Amino acid sequence: MCGIIGVVGGNQVGLDLVEGLKKMEYRGYDSAGIALQEGATFRLFRELGHVVNLEKSVEFDGKETIGIGHTRWATHGQVSVRNTHPHLSYDGAFAIVHNGVIENYKELRQELMDYGVPFASETDTEVIVNLIAFFYHQHPESLQATLLRAQHKLQGIYSFVLMAQAEPNVLYALRNRAPLLIGHKPGAYYVASDMLAMAQHTKQFYFLDDGEMARLTFDHCEIYRPDGTLVHKQPLTIDIPSSDVDKGPYEHYMLKEIHEQPFVLRRILSKYADDGVLKLDPIIIQALLEADSIQIIACGTSYHAGLVGKLLFEKVARKKTEVHIASEFSYQTPLLSEKPVFLLISQSGETADLRLSLDKIKELRRPVFTITNVMGSTLAREADAALLLYAGPEIAVASTKAYTAQISVLALLAQSLSTEGNLVHELTKIGFYMEEVLALETPIKTLVERLLDHAHNAFYLGRGIDYALSLEAALKLKEISYLQAEGFPSGELKHGPIALIEKDTPVFGIITQLSTALATRANLEEVRARGARTATIVLSSFKKPDDDLVLPDCHPLLTPMLTAIVVQYIAYYAAILKGTNVDKPRNLAKSVTVE
Ligand code: F6R
Image (cartoon, rainbow, N blue to C red; front, side):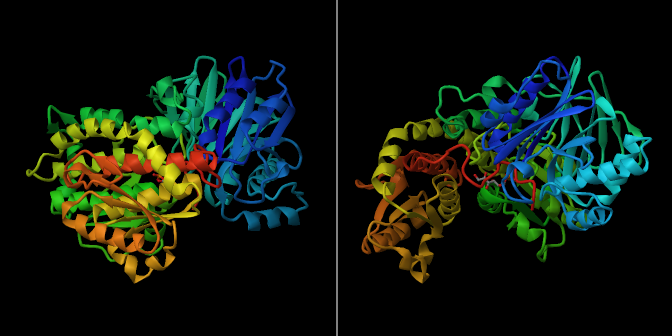
């Protein structure tokens, strides 16, 4: 979703802003802009489309010492230059960039218009900057007090960065439930919604909490609580190696991230297991052991990892587990057992639907933990404790390495609750098997060309754990190739979906469990008899001569770690075939910070 950045100090503010915006492109956006301030003058540059368009139009004169920038993912108002951030207040005295949604913006806009305040855009952002300007005219003595007044009026999820004519070398940054953090290097402060936008400049970060406001100059950072009192914070040192954010030799980030999966798995094992002995946070393990059920809450791909997690917890640890879609849970809290423990799974740690679920969970006063890839993310900080995925930044919008990382961590958690079995050892072997599956890239590409070339839809079939994987497979395919794709429990086919099968419909069968292999093969026969083009993805111990993709045998609960790579490749090569934008598919954002 939208990315925001502000820079004060240093000797290349304009360049830092553009580079920072580029680093946030992966989040998804449809227009971009920056504002530079020199004395009391703002220079505004805004363009539709990619940051390179903006880069061409920005004129730096090297004298800039302060500026703000934004990538916009349209929510309020269409994609147009006048809706693109930064926005100036009606009197031209303030410039703002904003991320999030102001829920009461219509009422506030009307109130301001009743006082004669004009509006130039359709955005909720303009309401913030006009409200600030309006209050400042009423009480011009203190900008800080003005921001606090505005903060009390604004409802919703938002963070913003503001520059004021009255204070030419100061950035104001305010966070309310939308990500915002500060980076520091000698002679400059950065503020952004995404650490990656600043990671090339600094390893020192200050995290803002909800309601906090920062006042930044080139050599000073003051952070205030909503009641106006000062907060003293220590910076956290976080190092993001540049190889984590570069594409390396790969054509797309998605391909790079697919290939990184064995490495990520090994890193997870090195963090959470010592010579085969598990060392996960004992507080989390104790809470899980004492709970009478585990409630997993997540969205999209993370939800699909949660479905595998349920099987792991129930089969390995005999612990009753339920999996909920966050956007449903937050509105219709289901009937729960007496002593549940909650696990939020979120690659980004910022997903708005999960934050709303967390609000509900906090009312229940039960333990809640986050499994996330982003250290210091909101969900990591707001839960009782967090387990990191250690997958490194995931830049491609379609999640790949975070999914297998989530399953790995869930497997280690499940194993920590049981004395039987040895999933640590099994996972160690998976790293090698993943490398074998990665080597199937060319046959998978050929299969995609054969099955999906003229396709307008596709189906994945599986049972049990293979059904959970089928859902993820279909999501991946639709996200980046835009093919209509569905995952079905193969036994359900004849209860309806089989009506969709016609000549040449592509159907992939995932067969990794001995107990269901025959049944799924029979279901594939049924669709083949109706003209479908089928392909099988099977484990080597029960392969048949005409199977299409054969994977190494592994522990039956860890097969998604291997089949995931196959379906990620299928989606990737389908997208290449269709010529879509693999890393930045249309309409999607990496971190979904609005409901
Ligand atoms: C799909 C994908 C999304 C995310 C979902 C949740 O490839 O990436 O479905 O999984 O938006 O995001 P997180 O895990 O950040 O909460």
